[in-house]
Length: 92
Image (tube, rainbow, N blue to C red; front, side):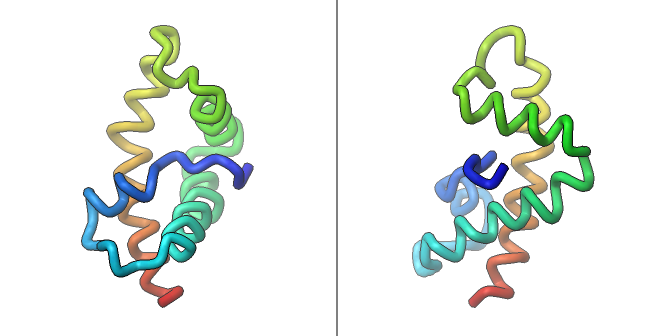
């Protein structure tokens, strides 16, 4: 499920040392790689797919999905920011 990014380029740049000098192409590739190669094996395919589906549909913020939103905001996003930062350095 590579058509959904669980974090944005803006969040990555705000939360890490990645700055405006890094091309969007490299950042987006690093985010997708961090999700597919790093995150999915850690949390499992079922939970990964669920998070992607909720983000893609825009229902991650619905009241019934508060626990998924908390997981995404407090844990997954932090992991992806740092993993993608490490990954983007290899592509430069």
